Image 1: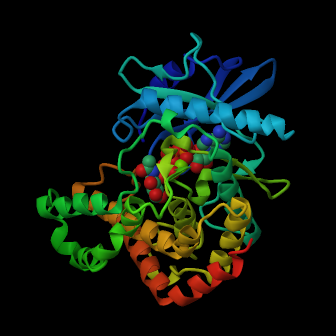
Image 2: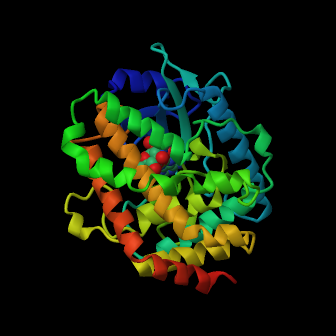
Length: 370
Ligand code: ADP
Ligand code: GN1
Ligand code: MG
């Protein structure tokens, strides 16, 4: 990410932050936006913020996206206050520009926003303590309950067909056919892995069409580094990265968390022998998610939880592979072959899930009454 300091400062200074800018450095490990830790200073006191250049290639309708973020954070803030919580730490808080807008368009047409920085909490790329993963399951389950009362028709679909796996498959096939980088012959094994599972991809949409799978306001990007765990209490403090809140499926919110957090290796681990589905982590997350969901999930949703985990992993691997074929134009990468390495961890995880299918089903059954 090479955005000059001059541009960062132009953006930072457009917002109603406290004091003078002291530093503004790259931050976090998100794959989509360009994120900076902005530190301002006034009277010897430091004030940290998150400054983000939003990815306009990925999010075509930034205005709609920011309306979603504003609407959802305002809604969550009210609930947090009503429950006696701390609204400055338990949800994202947008800092308006000096002229009262929620985002800023810079002199080169890029879109920027600022959030209060949430201190004393951490985003993990790998589960360090199973308890953290349990807490994140509970928080994501509860998040869906809270959003159940959010007016879905007010939400912009920020990325149409985001978790439409069959449509992702079509895009993948197009990328294979076009083969703009000449890489397809090197990834024949991975291409065959996807194709062998094509038939399974349409199940969620089929059940939705039959009225058997409910559409819910969901987060859609529930990986572990999109939730902040309080360093002191160990509780899940705040769910972040609200850019993909849209109508979706609960099984996919559950599944994307499993994909990332129940993997014994990081998403871009090169040594595939380290990749596996940890059944103990699968179990603690399932327990947390079902407790947090407070009995709202239907029989069909419960039954499809393992399927949600597998599909999110397969879909994500297929998206990484598509990006590899298209020349690494979507996800941020930091080395040659990064997307292919990510794709391979995802497919190794899918294969491991397939071998542990019966155990996964058993675990879900065990917590169904939670
Ligand atoms: P991306 O869409 O690129 O993943 P995120 O919104 O998830 O962008 O932000 C990237 C990272 O920045 C997060 O994983 C987290 O580490 C950090 N981050 C984002 N918002 C905040 C915040 N308000 N306070 C502290 N850290 C944050
Ligand atoms: C992206 O934005 P980030 O890094 O939290 C992506 C997700 C993928 C994930 C894979 C908008 O999430 O869909 O599952 O990378 N977000 C978008 O790590 O495409
Ligand atoms: Mg993120």
